[in-house]
Image (cartoon, rainbow over all chains, first blue to last red; front, side):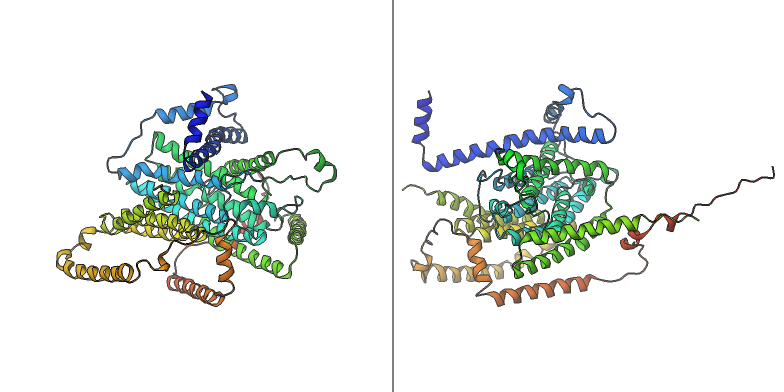
Length: 378
Length: 203
């Protein structure tokens, strides 16, 4: 039997074999990703539940472990209703359009040294291009639904995503300047050293801008005006039910995990050991595979998404636009100029990192003393 | 003749490009036309990738699909264009349009087909060695040989941005917008006054 399969395999064209092996690796990434999205929805309900003093879902499986499977089953078994006046073709294709970029961007993400599906040179650009694509699913869904609420949600989210993409792009220009490469693996390798060599410290403003823009790009709270329940019900996917809604859901959560992974690659040193350079801990943790560090770092951001949702009130629309255009873009441009100075002077990035650290300590101390004034009561 | 994998990608992509380009001008619905243009950009990006110009291909998707077409679609969706009005007088103008099209096609055929068929400039470009990075190559010439055109183009774009902002910037009176800096600066004591009221004693 195995000989038969082997013979069949060797009889194939080399190109066909390449396509099949690529497909296999695509599945190796995609299937765990889909399962991760399932668990992510469960974790979200649990975490937000505990933050709000509830226990969250606890009926299906051990402490609600299989709640997500029950949810999937419910969504898949529901009827997929197409509104009578909707544009049928675009209505059906919109969820797929939003799902494709959310998944295909994973091709360029390095999970550990050399473990990457497509080690392309212009990976950073590829990621930017694909995350920019995500907006199409939203606009097309909003327009094809032929519904006022859906259209309003689509317009809001389109404007928001275009605005934050610029800030995000500028933040990544900073990463590119620091790493001198567009290849994600090279970007991680350029951060080698200690935890202070990772770009979160020397590129601290860009790090904040990138992650917050990532939250805005995925239309998550506190930037979720595109689906603000109290104003436009559910925004662009208000007309979707059953599998159509499930696919939007999948795309949103896959995008959140993607933003977390990319933040780790760009700013937290990817698969690098956080204890590098620390005398005793470095030897103890030397055997830990890079992928473990990668996923552990990703968990920080994945949790932060939920934390934000549970703690911040939703931004007003004009405040979102102000933050994107008038705060983030100037901040990134200023930091690019600072970085340009460091490149011209040929100073190492760690110096910039320690400068940032010093300035923030001074600012925090100043803030403490300024805030310690007793309020005047009359 | 065995089919090379490049051909297997090229012909579908080229066919898609031509079909989508035709759809841009043929379909009735302007939103469909804009989306067809998006498909066009994608197909041409694939063709560029086949030419080992991955930077150009991805930049095309990034700039045109990711930014320009989103705004385009935005406007087309909101305008609710009446196609019937646009199509008025089609029959009357058709002969002139056909004449222009025939002349253009004739010129193209003459330039490409008869003049240069088989010339080396249409030969298949040589494959680059492994490790060749299109991005690096473009960067090298852009910042050395073509640095002045590059800088001038960016200054022109900057002027364009400033002009666009200046055209749309008008200060209207009567709007009730808030100043975020002032909002942040406000302290509790600016807004609340705690008053200790003495209890009345005469009862």
